[in-house]
Image 1: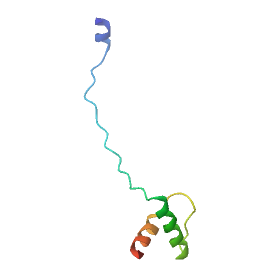
Image 2 (image 1 turned 180 degrees about the vertical axis):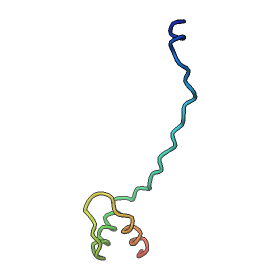
Image 3 (image 1 turned 90 degrees about the vertical axis):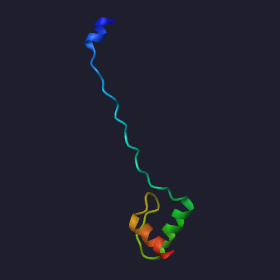
Image 4 (image 1 turned 60 degrees about the horizontal axis):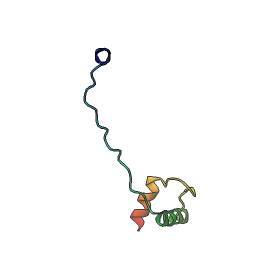
Length: 63
């Protein structure tokens, strides 16, 4: 065991990773309503993917 101990190197304490901040997911029924509202009000929004924050803010302000 001595050769392994001599060849090894000391490891310092592990660094803990900070938790990733995640955004709350909007239920799919709400996203459908937001997309419909956005299209009705002249916003350009795709059928899939993330809804831009400015559209989410505008929807929240209107409702």
